[in-house]
Amino acid sequence: MAHSVTLIPGDGIGPEVIEAARQVVAAAGVDVHWHEAEAGAGVVAKYGTPMPDATLNRIREDRVALKGPLTTPIGYGFGSPNVTLRKALDLYVCLRPVSSLPLVPSRYEDVDLIVVRENTEGLYSGVEHLVVPGIAESLKITTEVASVRIAEYTFELARKLGRKRVTSVHKANIMKITDGLFLECCRRVARRYPEVEYQEEIIDALCMKLVKDPTQFDMLLTDNLYGDIVSDLCAGLVGGLGVVPGANLGREWAVFEAVHGSAPDIAGKGMANPLAVILSACMMLEHLEEDAAARRVRDAVTRALGSGVATRDLGGTATTQEFTQAVIAAL
Ligand code: NAI
Image 1 (cartoon, rainbow, N blue to C red):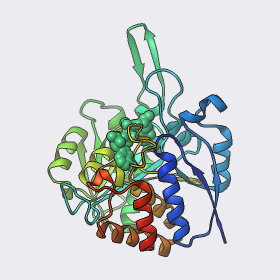
Image 2 (image 1 turned 45 degrees about the horizontal axis):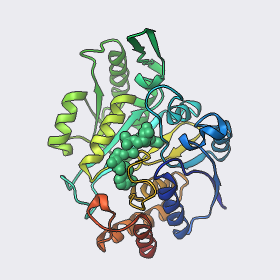
Image 3 (image 1 turned 180 degrees about the vertical axis):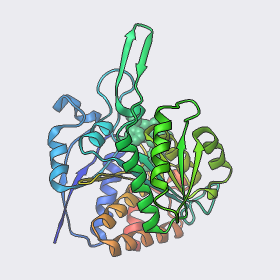
């Protein structure tokens, strides 16, 4: 039976890397009925919003989406379409596995981290205002419900994958009430999983420790802002933003996307690394219970890299399409 999946090309390098992933999924022999939907800065003139209702409804119907990055203009104007999407579909988990890939040049060879980021609140709640000219306020919203459910998701995943340790990330020494509540919820949930070791790290110290020796961590449980920053830091440990996949998961819907953004500096030049979106598509295939196909694609990626084909961000010379074709040939 064909799977129905919403396909959102997005902005910048989005269309190039999404097309690469679509070709690879087809070559893996999985029958997917793609429904293309629009979102991003490029559709504001047409719809008056970067996240049209029709796109949200399309995902609600298909239940699963593969999404390219969306540009968010800095400063005044529309809020982030990604935040709108995550809140509208209550995609409360942002799951980002960060692993060293064979033959990808990086500082470390044995990184195997999972970042689990709360995706719906915190400082990204979007509750901001100008009090008077020259004074602006942004509210960090932390709720018990959201903190407990992200902690429960993390510990359940640790149990399922046989992971040893969960480290929750905070700044409760300064933000005693908001981060204090987050920590209290994490501790409460941790007590129900005695087989998983529980640790806490202050965000700034964590960043230093990650750079010095990422292998000392296993799973990181974070709020929205810290998770956003730590994900990019972790990407830097394994070869950069071109190689790290991700998923936004809720109880009903799932949207798969790379960690990286729309990379306007290289858009349209055929230079984008499609690997992160191809690996996001692998996570999507696993979600669709197409585990064998996901494994085939992961093996093909390893073989393509092994044959020396790599995009420029990894020190190679291949274009987006040349790397994609190497993966397809390996399949
Ligand atoms: P970015 O991730 O787009 O780019 C950062 C750097 O990494 C750039 O030098 C870029 O060329 C490079 N890079 C990123 N992806 C790459 C790939 N696949 N292959 C090779 N190089 C790659 O971050 P930036 O520049 O801060 O954000 C650009 C726009 O993307 C902003 O509007 C931002 O809001 C948006 N964004 C969207 C995300 C999403 O839709 N999930 C996530 C992050 C940012």
